[in-house]
Image 1 (cartoon, rainbow, N blue to C red):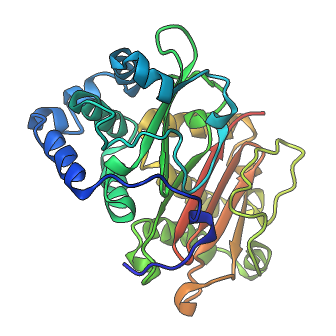
Image 2 (tube, rainbow, N blue to C red):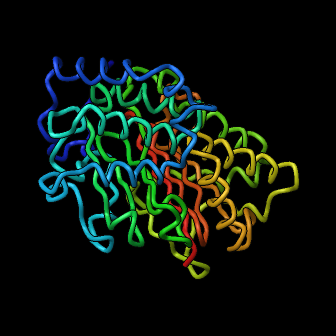
Length: 325
């Protein structure tokens, strides 16, 4: 994998777990009975992710809780960045027991779809050597009210909150990405770029002129929900015909497909509550067109209740924030 300097990936990361420890983590997960590791019809999916979060929280010692547990209203829970650690202990370190690492693995599986888990696993392997180089925190208490489990690391943020934030999909902003830079097509999320570009390809000349902008703005990390009075760039979905709007809906379903169905459904309900997909705008950016092929690698979908910002060059950083204000 080619590695280029990316300023948004340059925040100081914690020391990575030694390769020997990675192998120990991999061996412990591999030792889980096959039935428990399957995505469908298995104990890992028999209970919700939040049930496993409760089990994980209950298993923590006081010393562990002092390092990875925070109040639910701690502002750090809302932080969104492409490369940061929400807590100091890494999943692959001996800070956690083998059983606790197994529970973390099950939570990751439970908040993902089958195909999404496969992609996220490869992403973690490629970008940081595996799940062991990521960190988790628990905000609040799963047995006493609002709570959220949060996983962060290079190019990934995952959340499970039991709908503790009912007007916010996923419980907050999500991040995904992949450090592959040799070509756009080798990035594991290139299929999303192709799907979004199907919308662009369906536009007529005047629509394409409105949708295609010279450079990306606002910046990728600006994913604040603006509400109905917000200002959004690009082409309004309301200006599209029914066939084009159907492509938009298919596109959104594709973007949400790596996550569990209930989270994707909640996200779409929040978009519908703010006026539906017709209130969204699509912006494509000429900036950094990899291969000069006019398959636009940078794009943004935004409206009163949703922001999806995808930066495909030099490698993928993508952000999703969907909420009702």
